[in-house]
Length: 203
Image (cartoon, rainbow, N blue to C red; front, side, top):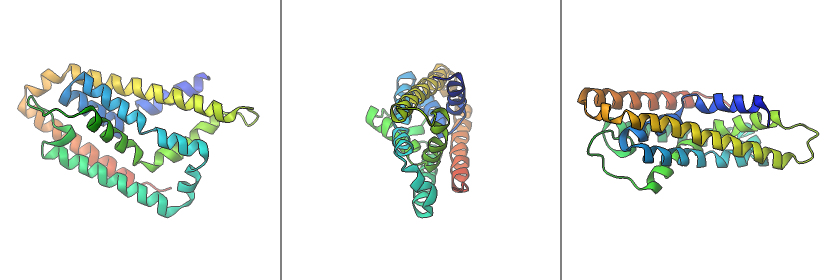
């Protein structure tokens, strides 16, 4: 396991994105346990992209405009749906004292959908993983599986860290109505911005 792989993976994972945003919101709205579950869901959402990259299916997304565009706009629609839920003060991003409980399954499902509906992840892993596997590697498949597992572990740890931090300041947020209002607007705006960024993404 190279230091370059670990550092590059850490930078990629820690960079703010939809998964980080979702985990932060889970921590703020429902506490540390919910943020850890959300981080787990986001991590699970990486698996299809990893599998696609390892099996070569990501090449199809890269070459097929229809497949890429379909998955991309499904992702955009879901991000806008998340933004709308935030603005109307309901759904998975409701932040407040009287937040209705959500089952672990619901939190995990939302986390999975956030990552699974981003076609750029497949292409990213298709380009990323082979850089750290030598062409002369006798067990290339097992090596890529090993790297993928490490990447997923880092994703879970970093996302959970973000969420636990958010949970630690939750009491300071929910007790201030104006902070809550601006927090909801900020999250909604961030999801819209990420959706717009995804919509403008080319293969």
